[in-house]
Image (cartoon, rainbow, N blue to C red; front, top):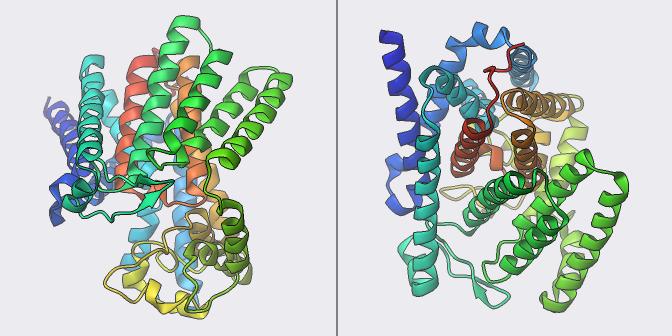
Length: 429
């Protein structure tokens, strides 16, 4: 009885902490910015406590084993790294690098014990949608004044303001709008038609293209690639090839017609800047991609170690790696790191090496298999599209380490599991 009460309290504490993280941009309080790290710490303890329970499940066993191998690789990187690393920051960053996987994994363990109603989970998602809509509406009305209130810079793209929304950051608008629209829209079509129709693929693609300009969020366009994969995995190859060709022409045409006149020349210039480490080079994403790859090669088969290159705790662990590859000092010598997060996958590649990145990919694959075992075919399709979108975003952004993304992703996972669940829990066979 006591265990049930504790699990119930933990589950609702989770939901509260996720709500705090979701609102950190509005709250603008230091304690709120640490709520996702508290979530991660609690998740680690829950997973440690349920270690043997997870290993008794079909897909839980390889998933847990791979997570253990991941931390062994982190330990090897730490011991043999040529840099002066601190264990606390190295281990902390290793946990943060799996935040978007460990948090939903832990909350699902609590979900199995508490068994909240579908209505509760649905209403929780509706609450987040309402808060998001309020922030977006206020930003549209107040324009740059709202950005200033939330401490977000005033910038324009295609002549439109890059809005802060509810979160205090334009990129978060893209995360939320894309993932929620995918889950809700796919759910409606699957319920009515039993499958995703051509009309859905076309209308969703148009939806993303239209919104990418006034909201200045282009990352949603990558979700079209995720849907193409879903179509490929459930339909004929002829259909996906035809859809892919049409989509590419649409993308090219939209950017030619509506894009900035300097779009292609700027892209060419950015590519040329990628290997230029001069202090006047502001194209930090190119620098991080190029140097992240070169570090992985030079430290083959392992990496530089967690919290050394392009991750949040590298500021406190060591700056040696930035100096080694001559990243301009103004990107990392201020009070906070700036710009170096714009590399996602390539930062993880540098820190983990080729061995570590392969293990991380396997962790993601078996995490997806673990989730798929809990839901029916419709639920699996939705979760697959979410996971592929996350992976695509991870190429240039540290989404799996991000608190707000983790909250959005976790909420949607719980929602999909509650709506499309199968009779057996935790993937038992």
